[in-house]
Image (cartoon, rainbow, N blue to C red):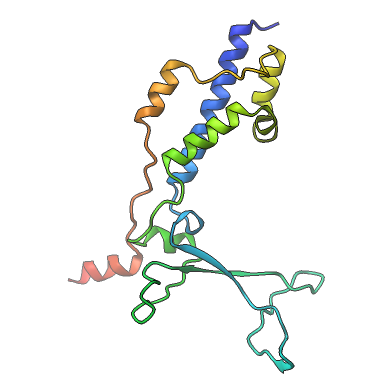
Length: 178
């Protein structure tokens, strides 16, 4: 049988792994992780006010039922409706080459989520069942252990660093011709 200290160490390790996973996810350049991204559902109506809708979504699954599709749109600069270009941003490649990409999740958001998680046993059970089981085994459900001092120190200097901007193949080809 494991000692209480070994179980606590494993709990803290699982918690640190979850923090790393969330930081890695927040650091990715993906459309749904950008502050300017907005998903717009495509129209699935065959008729609109009794008139045929020639532009309805025709994507269906194997049973013939319509599949709800969304189109990603970059809302950067949408405040100026006259000069707004309305760029599509549905693919990862779009986000990786976008100079206006802004991360949706910041370090403070992750820190707040982890604090909420470690202060609420029911939430911990739903999100990290392994961590919940570990604290249940040692009987520390009422007072959930926090990260150790060195993990908290490590977190203080940890940053959410978004992946660097990638040049598209088109812009790279243009630079090589100049």
